[in-house]
Image 1 (cartoon, rainbow, N blue to C red):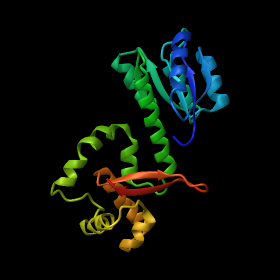
Image 2: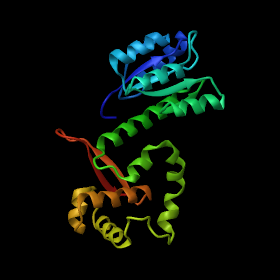
Image 3: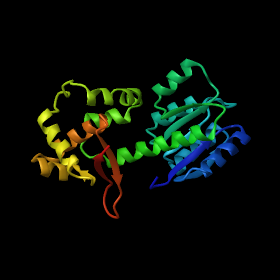
Image 4: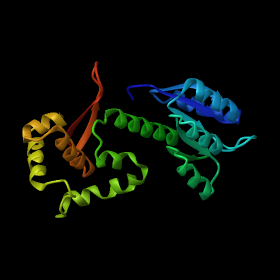
Amino acid sequence: MTQSIRVVIAEDDVQIAEIQKRFLERIDGVELVGIAHTLEDAEDLVDVFKPELLLLDNHFPKGTGLELLRKLRANNSETDVILITAAKEVDTLREALRSGVFHYILKPLVFERLQDAIHQYAAHLEKLHAMEDLVQTDVDTLLPQRAVANTAAPQEITNSNQRPPKGIDGITLDKIRTVFSDSEESLNAEEVGTMIGASRTTARRYLEYMVSTQELEAQVNYGSVGRPERRYISA
């Protein structure tokens, strides 16, 4: 992680909150800015610090975490939420998803599960920061319901004789494959577009498609000045 993710913990059990605090201290790139043991305090901390992420329990003596989540969304809060709860009811999960949680973790919380969720969130933020002109593959990699499809389907697409989707031309794909077969260096969309005689936007659409089929890997490079740059290299 190249930029600290500011986090608030909202957990009514003091001991569990302390465990979460110690877990976060072991994860690089995370800054804990506050711990709340009531929903009111959690709302205040989010309002004051405007953290990127809230680790939110669901059951509180006065109300639920989902009630706070709905209130945050109604107030257009930009804080994302990982719900950490003992609630195993499917209806609770459905409501959490409808309310826009980034992740849903069942208690008891283990370090590896939290670490993985934080790393996923960091990667999610990096993708958002690196985006310029939005293409469908950008959306596909960000929406959680695509996670299973993106891990199961790409190899089948790459190795089969299926035609590429609409808007992806086989001849242009072959040109880009040739570019990367002749280069071991990472390239950005503008560089690839120049090499194949296409615009940066067109090149990026093909590059993101090739990322979705696992022919290429996307890397986010942070320069000293300006926005992050998305570069591509053979997988």
